[in-house]
View 1: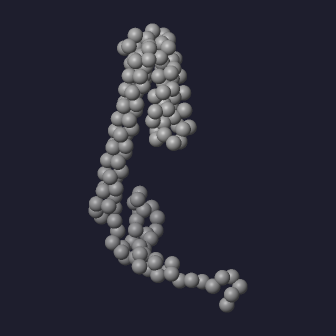
View 2: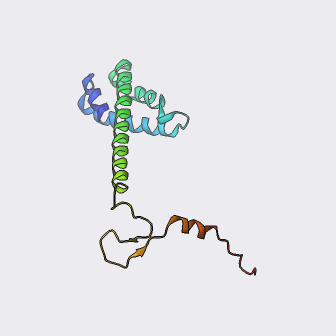
View 3: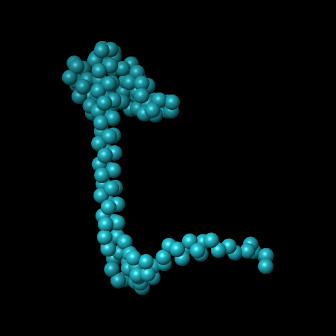
Length: 142
Protein backbone atom coordinates (compact mmCIF):
# COMPACT_ATOMS: atom_id res chain seq x y z
CA UNK A 1 0.00 0.00 0.00
CA UNK A 2 2.79 2.43 0.88
CA UNK A 3 4.49 1.75 -2.45
CA UNK A 4 1.32 2.54 -4.37
CA UNK A 5 0.75 5.77 -2.44
CA UNK A 6 4.37 6.84 -2.91
CA UNK A 7 4.32 5.98 -6.61
CA UNK A 8 1.21 8.12 -7.10
CA UNK A 9 2.85 11.00 -5.21
CA UNK A 10 5.83 10.97 -7.57
CA UNK A 11 3.64 11.00 -10.67
CA UNK A 12 2.81 7.40 -11.63
CA UNK A 13 -0.60 6.88 -13.25
CA UNK A 14 -3.09 5.65 -10.64
CA UNK A 15 -4.45 2.71 -12.65
CA UNK A 16 -0.99 1.49 -13.65
CA UNK A 17 0.61 2.09 -10.24
CA UNK A 18 -1.55 -0.29 -8.18
CA UNK A 19 -0.71 -3.60 -9.92
CA UNK A 20 2.87 -2.41 -10.37
CA UNK A 21 3.24 -1.60 -6.67
CA UNK A 22 1.71 -4.89 -5.56
CA UNK A 23 3.84 -6.89 -7.97
CA UNK A 24 7.03 -4.99 -7.15
CA UNK A 25 6.61 -5.46 -3.42
CA UNK A 26 5.63 -9.13 -3.67
CA UNK A 27 8.45 -10.04 -6.04
CA UNK A 28 11.06 -8.02 -4.15
CA UNK A 29 9.96 -9.43 -0.79
CA UNK A 30 10.10 -13.03 -2.06
CA UNK A 31 13.53 -12.51 -3.61
CA UNK A 32 14.79 -10.93 -0.39
CA UNK A 33 13.41 -13.86 1.59
CA UNK A 34 15.21 -16.37 -0.63
CA UNK A 35 18.60 -14.65 -0.29
CA UNK A 36 19.50 -15.98 3.13
CA UNK A 37 22.81 -14.12 3.36
CA UNK A 38 21.07 -10.74 3.48
CA UNK A 39 19.20 -10.12 6.75
CA UNK A 40 15.55 -9.45 5.88
CA UNK A 41 16.59 -9.23 2.24
CA UNK A 42 18.44 -5.97 2.85
CA UNK A 43 19.65 -4.58 -0.43
CA UNK A 44 18.16 -7.33 -2.57
CA UNK A 45 14.62 -6.17 -2.00
CA UNK A 46 15.46 -2.55 -2.75
CA UNK A 47 17.41 -3.31 -5.95
CA UNK A 48 14.57 -5.40 -7.36
CA UNK A 49 11.96 -2.84 -6.38
CA UNK A 50 13.93 -0.04 -8.06
CA UNK A 51 14.36 -2.16 -11.20
CA UNK A 52 10.60 -2.76 -11.42
CA UNK A 53 9.47 0.79 -10.58
CA UNK A 54 12.13 2.77 -12.48
CA UNK A 55 10.56 2.42 -15.96
CA UNK A 56 7.37 4.04 -14.68
CA UNK A 57 8.56 6.66 -12.18
CA UNK A 58 12.29 7.08 -12.93
CA UNK A 59 15.31 5.74 -11.06
CA UNK A 60 15.56 8.57 -8.48
CA UNK A 61 11.94 8.37 -7.29
CA UNK A 62 12.05 4.55 -7.47
CA UNK A 63 15.07 4.54 -5.16
CA UNK A 64 13.30 6.88 -2.75
CA UNK A 65 10.18 4.67 -2.80
CA UNK A 66 12.26 1.55 -2.08
CA UNK A 67 14.06 3.19 0.84
CA UNK A 68 10.90 4.67 2.35
CA UNK A 69 9.21 1.30 1.97
CA UNK A 70 12.07 -0.36 3.87
CA UNK A 71 11.82 2.25 6.63
CA UNK A 72 8.04 1.87 6.93
CA UNK A 73 8.30 -1.93 7.04
CA UNK A 74 11.08 -1.80 9.67
CA UNK A 75 9.14 0.63 11.88
CA UNK A 76 6.01 -1.53 11.59
CA UNK A 77 7.99 -4.64 12.57
CA UNK A 78 9.44 -2.84 15.60
CA UNK A 79 6.02 -1.56 16.70
CA UNK A 80 4.49 -5.04 16.46
CA UNK A 81 7.43 -6.54 18.36
CA UNK A 82 7.09 -3.89 21.08
CA UNK A 83 3.35 -4.46 21.45
CA UNK A 84 3.85 -8.24 21.62
CA UNK A 85 6.62 -7.87 24.23
CA UNK A 86 4.51 -5.54 26.36
CA UNK A 87 1.54 -7.92 26.15
CA UNK A 88 3.65 -10.94 27.12
CA UNK A 89 5.26 -9.11 30.04
CA UNK A 90 1.86 -7.94 31.25
CA UNK A 91 0.43 -11.43 30.90
CA UNK A 92 3.42 -12.99 32.70
CA UNK A 93 3.29 -10.50 35.58
CA UNK A 94 -0.45 -11.04 35.93
CA UNK A 95 0.01 -14.81 36.18
CA UNK A 96 2.71 -14.67 38.82
CA UNK A 97 1.52 -11.63 40.79
CA UNK A 98 -0.65 -13.20 43.42
CA UNK A 99 -2.65 -16.03 44.85
CA UNK A 100 -4.47 -16.65 41.58
CA UNK A 101 -1.22 -17.26 39.72
CA UNK A 102 0.73 -19.24 42.31
CA UNK A 103 -0.03 -22.03 44.73
CA UNK A 104 2.10 -22.54 47.84
CA UNK A 105 3.56 -26.06 48.18
CA UNK A 106 1.18 -28.55 49.78
CA UNK A 107 -2.05 -26.73 48.97
CA UNK A 108 -4.52 -28.34 46.58
CA UNK A 109 -4.69 -27.01 43.04
CA UNK A 110 -8.15 -26.23 41.69
CA UNK A 111 -9.21 -26.18 38.09
CA UNK A 112 -9.24 -22.78 36.44
CA UNK A 113 -13.00 -22.93 35.90
CA UNK A 114 -13.84 -23.53 39.53
CA UNK A 115 -14.67 -26.70 41.42
CA UNK A 116 -15.72 -28.87 38.51
CA UNK A 117 -13.43 -31.72 39.33
CA UNK A 118 -11.49 -33.30 42.17
CA UNK A 119 -8.79 -31.27 43.77
CA UNK A 120 -5.28 -32.32 42.87
CA UNK A 121 -2.72 -32.08 45.65
CA UNK A 122 0.29 -29.99 44.76
CA UNK A 123 3.58 -31.86 44.79
CA UNK A 124 6.61 -29.86 45.93
CA UNK A 125 9.34 -29.63 43.29
CA UNK A 126 11.83 -31.31 45.64
CA UNK A 127 9.69 -34.45 45.57
CA UNK A 128 9.52 -34.41 41.80
CA UNK A 129 13.27 -34.02 41.40
CA UNK A 130 13.89 -36.86 43.87
CA UNK A 131 11.54 -39.10 41.86
CA UNK A 132 13.26 -38.25 38.60
CA UNK A 133 16.67 -39.20 40.05
CA UNK A 134 15.47 -42.72 40.83
CA UNK A 135 16.58 -45.18 38.26
CA UNK A 136 14.77 -48.34 37.36
CA UNK A 137 16.64 -51.30 35.96
CA UNK A 138 16.14 -52.04 32.28
CA UNK A 139 13.55 -54.63 31.39
CA UNK A 140 14.78 -58.15 32.03
CA UNK A 141 17.48 -57.11 34.53
CA UNK A 142 17.04 -57.98 38.20
